[in-house]
Image (cartoon, rainbow, N blue to C red):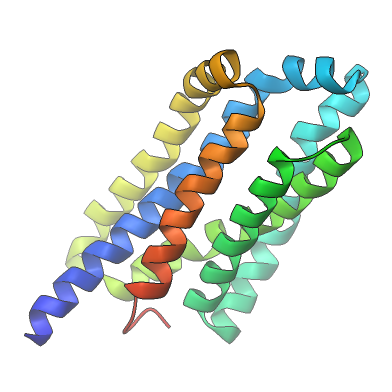
Length: 192
């Protein structure tokens, strides 16, 4: 029975890490398509519009290494879980933003959540899977990253065209809630 629980735990960890690895690059690449719609709604010039995309990437890059180190000290699952919650909450707040400044602030917060997720997801996989399975697992994880980057412009354009730019953030909220459920109810054991 313990071996069966371990297999299920490994599969859930892989599913959660893969979804998280899809989510963060998807957000970055999909929103670029929506920038003209955001600019029209808020009457933004090119400089301020550029900050909507840049604020996310900049905060994710700044906080990636520090949160990786904090996760080693405080626990990977804890930082990953907080990252998913912050990312999901900031996606929702971005969707209901009423000004460009609010959107930029929430995008910074979203980038921080993204750094917490990205800085710990591979470490979680490393702690759950044995050496013989790591190559396959890392390949699946890397494929999810590139799938998010590749599908982002297409799905972002589709969502923006049919439902408005806010739907991109709401799609991230939906995936984030699914991840939160999996993280808090299913992942346990050696994740640490």
